[in-house]
Image (tube, rainbow, N blue to C red; front, side, top):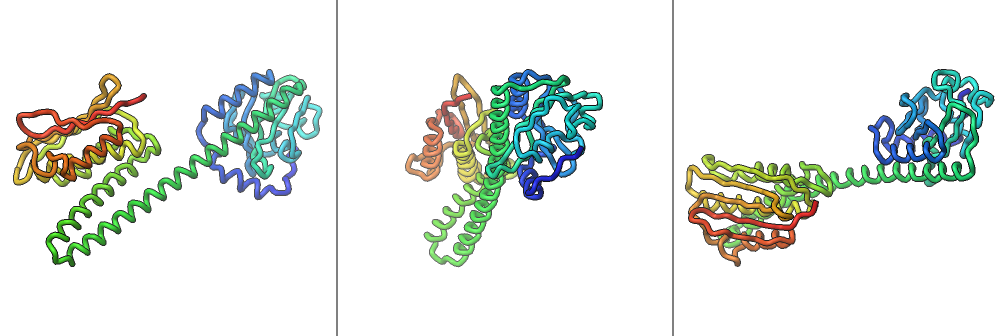
Length: 361
């Protein structure tokens, strides 16, 4: 017997599809609630059943192999039509289920209890239901527990949607920031071309260079697409690829970065360090040179992360070696944002910049 439609069926279906949960992969949070429902109610079968227009689909299940069925055979659809908790002690004698293929077929379902999965407006998506192959009746405690667990399922569904919406918003913001930075760079370039004062042109060139740096770092973060936690091994590979174009053709840039997850803000500081050292090396260490080597190495050691950027150029040049230079001030500030320190090891040739910060797994 097919269940009757509820009054707001079209709204209910739109709500269900808006959660984008139908036909998604299994998720641990839903699986755990389903197993707990079966244990509390002392039954072999439990499932999170979502009722679509012409089918029911199981987001999570225990004790049964099928992933869903036609709407005509959905007992959960009767729970929705009933607009309340539904318990059928013996499905073979209830007219709503006596001819249901879940009852007459191999599953031989004899008992059903389902608590509605409702949104804030009491529109149901489906049920958290428990089933058995023999007739029975749940205790008051079991009924109450099933309904409480159904509310937890709904909270999981709403949280899942909220996280997805937040990710979409983050991507949109990233896209707009990228466009804004590019537009600002273009405006500064136009201003540079029209500016006659050498001092003003120099200052605008410096501003444009810093904007380009921020734009590249933002793009690398955006393309890494890891949300709040970023693996700097993948992120820095993108930073180096975008920045090494400044190097002369004969300069070899190598990257060996051990995995380390950081927040987006911390990763941005690390990217700034690598970008700044490459920029300065291209400007000072490899100016007028046709060959050379630049290495970026990141390693874990005793609870700390060591990031070093090394060139084989002639040594410090004005602007990077002095603590008053803009390049050095940027590196010091980035190291401080990581809660670490900036080190400049002595070398016979070239320059090495090392930043060390504590890490937590």
